[in-house]
Image 1 (tube, rainbow over the protein chains, first blue to last red):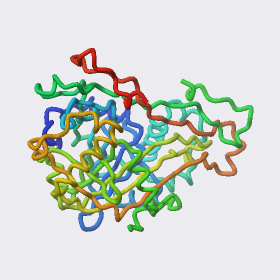
Image 2 (image 1 turned 180 degrees about the horizontal axis):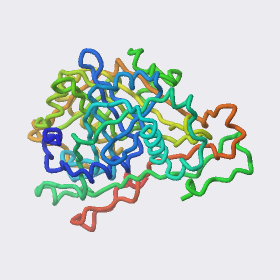
Image 3 (image 1 turned 30 degrees about the vertical axis):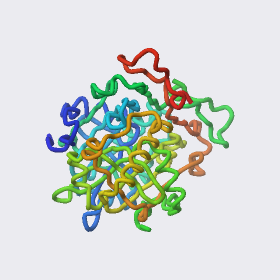
Length: 209
Length: 209
């Protein structure tokens, strides 16, 4: 496991190597940001969806997608972040965010096995919308041929977590400034049927929960 | 402006170079992910908060933060992403996400001017919590000395946006699968006062709106 990644200055104590911690963040985060290096050391960071199966992280896209072409066989960094609270300290200096982030570094390998590709695509659909894989038109052979699935092993990984109330300096405690947390939550709203959806097709139960 | 970044395969039509579009995404996104390249072409992607002033993006951190040490003077990619809806097509293949992402590539320059540093820190605090800068203990000279502020010009930038209902193949329209959007919204909850906050300090108005 990487050890230098999380020594990020002031708050090295926030780092964690625990696989279960990393896995839980990857599973809860709807999207991730994948970084790769193109010519001249230029990094590129793009959002994408992902899924985890055991100790592997899967990404997918079109076989034509330039970023996946760049990504395959090269060093990646995949980062998923959940923002929990705005941390309002009495001082601007100690103000912060409560968050959980997972960083996975590794080389993207193209998945060739049909079984593993199907498992990865199912995991990605279920990650975004649990219950959907059993209620969607599954990929055809032609669609599968134009879809690239890559696997990044979750070996060199770390997590960073900040939680709890703001940490104020002793000297600031007597000030009149409000201090505390402003919680942030992502909620799923009411499903919006496609304008051309037949009226006799009800909203599936897995979208209502 | 970069032109190859947004030619990302299937959906090149989603790309946009418009500065106002990029700026609006940067302003609405609470956090961004910054990518930089360390030794051996290894990219690293970390979450951080940011703020925009005109055509500059500002990031900050401790002078001890390894990532900022790595970032200064080197090529960065800063990406901010807003996820609007889960896009449920009748087919797994056409399922997607509605999102808006902005990508800024450039070299991070350390901000030396006191005036610009203060403006950047104010913008960062106000970006996370509008109204807070006028109601927080401002940085001391000592705190400012341990804070590094870097500026990335918003010159080489692009946006990608997907919106609207799912795009199904003609042949899938007769299936019985539900199709439509599942909206996602980030909401701010009730402020949670610090356990040791004096009882006579009320929740500020800017946190209640």
